[in-house]
Amino acid sequence: MKNNATKTAKKLGLVAVAMFGFGYLMVPIYNILCEVTGINGKTGRITQSQVNANDVDVDRFVTVEFDTNVNPNLPWTFKAAEFKQQVRPGEIAEAVFVVENKSNKIIVGQAVPSVAPEQASLFFNKTECFCFINQELAPGEKKDMIVRYVVDSDLPEKITTMTLSYTFFKASEKAVAVTGQDRKIVIKDNG
Image: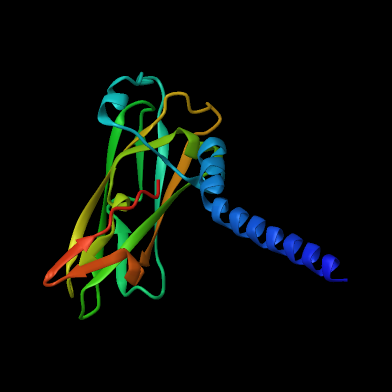
């Protein structure tokens, strides 16, 4: 009887370790899957030199629409300066977004991007984006923020319009490190 209880306890311990390991690996596996397949609309990130190596499709235009959202827990307004742009695949483009803190205290926010349709996210890359770092705004502060992006010239012909969407969330307290009077904004790459 004691031998069976020991075997059962060992098996349950192994199951618990396996479940913990699976849970720990879920986020990296999910991120890799999203990057490879374009699921969840995650965008890519490229360097300026990679942009320069792209071929520009001068005979084609793609419409990029901009969608902005703010989580209800964040007292900010957020909008794109332009609702949409016409861009040539392979050519670098720039969009401006305006954010304002409507509260009476300093708040740090994080923008999370996505692209629709999902297949288009495989062909949408950013060289610079306000979403790469947390944004700190003083009470009443208004800020212009830039995203520089490239629609890859390999974008399938059937995709003529895509939507770049951002949702701003209040950054968690763990994401903001405060040392004395200095605030350090933690750099995060959400793609």
